[in-house]
Image 1 (cartoon, helix red, strand yellow):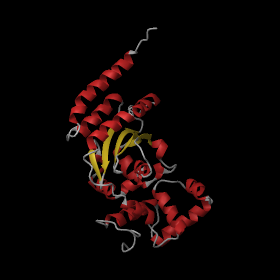
Image 2 (cartoon, one colour; image 1 turned 180 degrees about the vertical axis):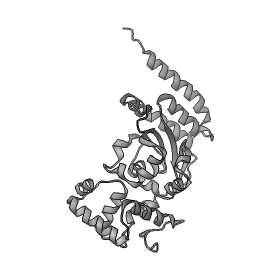
Image 3 (cartoon, helix red, strand yellow; image 1 turned 135 degrees about the vertical axis):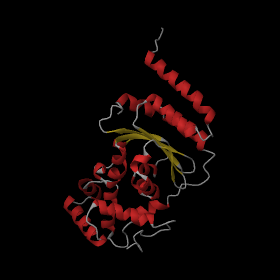
Length: 276
């Protein structure tokens, strides 16, 4: 019984073959991250494609729009705002490389969060998907494909399925390129800075509530997760704002970032201690 291969499938195999012919010889070279991004763009449209390597600290390897965010926002992201990035949060417990869409990761109030407004909105991104490539030493690569609001480049289900199917290949190529280069274990010390934020000034429950607000959880989602009423969440939030002398989520985000940026090397405890 004969089988016919569609022209679409043949064209895709052709693009993949040509991309790998250019990419594979560059494993280990400085051009590899850029060429990897080019291969991805051969398969799906995007408004922004970014590679961030998280080793001892995060480093932008490829980014087409970081200049639109501004140097201050980039500095803040690298100094610790990445702790609030849903892709980073997903990496904490991830054991193997995986493809994600933002909708799979973000809390229900994420698009009202200051992280979303400070970083994604400023560069015009509304939707994002990408890979988390996990290395043996705990380091990871975030390869993201971003799309603007109303963009013609936004991906359909078939394109998302295609990207997901490429996960083993992308993972293998990245392991080959970075596997022997990564000598520094991932510094997760700042994870404790988020976990301890506000602990010297707030009750345990108040601290939990404001950390969830920072990550983009809505009042109703916080209530559901903590098994309390939305009214109780609002009381905890009001009391926390009063103790921290702030009045909004913008103030809370700025306080968190200000506390983090005072450290060259965070060594534990509430980042707010000594900040006021």
